Length: 295
Image 1 (spheres, helix red, strand yellow):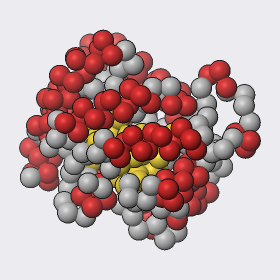
Image 2 (cartoon, one colour; image 1 turned 45 degrees about the vertical axis):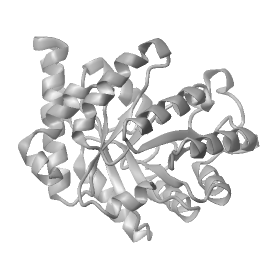
Image 3 (tube, helix red, strand yellow; image 1 turned 135 degrees about the vertical axis):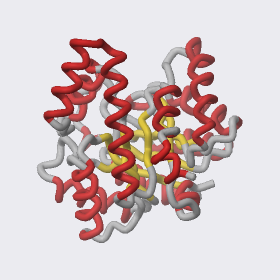
Image 4 (tube, helix red, strand yellow; image 1 turned 180 degrees about the horizontal axis):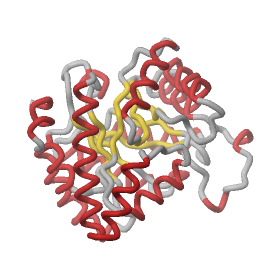
């Protein structure tokens, strides 16, 4: 079923993003974690894969398995470094497997092609991919990414929202945001999007901090990610005094407060970047004030 239709049916929800291990040997442990998360009754789940389609076959296998476990899976699909033939094959395979949704992304170049000229590629914008899917595989549901703190390559937020508007005009159904830690940034982004005529649901993406090195890696990748100063100081102090577990506890408590505030202020639901950690996600979902919103 198309996720946009599910969004119109339910007031509040969790959705989950999985980062499957590249090595199939690790898949049994991964699916053990996934099965535990069925208790959250996520509206849908999304599945990442490598740059340039490096693990696309793995993605297909994993979303098929998730479908068999009664999840509504959405496959991530990047277009940089790909071509129409390969994309058509993959999309047809998804449909044949009963997968009804994709997250359309531009993606990053594989390391071996980092210096290639994107303008000479068949696809170089996420909007190109959205248009391609909607034109040739129109029955699929399409989500796209949003950046409350702007895409790192965008000169400013208004320009970035203009790119989002282009993706919506090409046929995207709804938006999932990149992670953020300042809720005001999400609501400012939402207001600016509405002013530009974007009426589709914009689902906030939340990452519970699990470790300080992990957070710093994410900051180096996102570039524009804002971490409140007081929160970063607290995380660093927790890391010094109690190590990774102390950081995890602090990260979970911050995520609980952030999610509750988002729901109280009208967010349609919460997309959790799970890091494949069922215990953390279940702890957040069972927090009574949050659980009441999801009931």
